[in-house]
Image 1 (tube, rainbow, N blue to C red):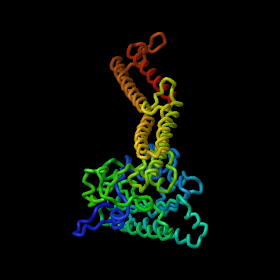
Image 2 (cartoon, rainbow, N blue to C red; image 1 turned 60 degrees about the horizontal axis):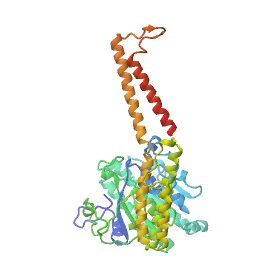
Image 3 (cartoon, rainbow, N blue to C red; image 1 turned 180 degrees about the vertical axis):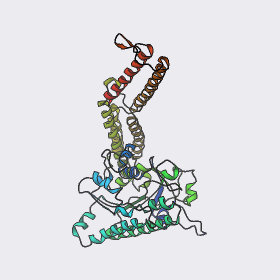
Length: 455
């Protein structure tokens, strides 16, 4: 909200004047919607990998990869990244060896009690500038910088730190935002001046939002709505709003941006957008959908790009379906009914035939239909064992309640005496209550065995 909003003066000045000029003059904008939990690690995983990471990562403090995954950094020819020691090492460890250079500042700079948390952002901008200065005298570095599919990742933590300490609408946060705005402008001028070919694309966004009281992690709109501004090579110029993209939430009017087309996306959609902009393959674990409305394209390129996204999602459905089948009992596996494996290849052939006939718009429409089915299929397989796990938990809790109830009734009926014996066995073993409890325990054992076989 702070990035797009204006102050209350008569001039209605923007808190980020350069980003505002980009929206009004050379780029496209919208809102990126994140998922709960709105924390830094899941947000960055969604941005650079295109997937919403399992919340089990919280058991490792959001600092380690519970499972390895592909990312935009792996798909680049080389990535240079600067920023927080809490974020960058997570991706550097998972990147292809030698493909990512990650520079982090001293952890002591992340001081939530510091009155000037913006200095971590200053550090990032200075290190980025130093790289290009060094490239002027380092031929090997210059050669690497001039390769295709190069990514520069600037992680700017100062606004988040100041937001926690001083609250989002404080003077400190607004001053930090102005510093970031000027730093972005300076870096864009530096990169454009260095390359001079107009082939660089820029994406400005955030991993999560923040409430008015300086927190994030839950699902309030202030936490899940983040800015997205894209400009440069391959990005559409600003245009007036169309009937296709209509929003009635009042935010465009509140920010004074209603004259410019707004295109909202899911946060995971940004990964395929960035991969397409640099001409790289979409990360294989991505669940995002390429937002074609941001891209300046001809119909042929658009159709091929969305078809690549489609194939990548379809392959995930196939692999996840086969994995579920291998780990299930033969008669207890139920594949996704709307996209059985027997029809998946037929979908691909139909789209390929349309591309061969240059019926690009029909191919795009069919790809979008298939993408919706793929995403539904991925959700189906992600939650495949949800019902059985819920039943197991219900049976466990009911069994425990029955156990407690039986114990209480026995104690009440026998006056607390458990030592009665008949034929060498406890006298209470064969009564109806005990038999019921034994049957319940056997049922729980059976459910547990079934779940073990399914896994």
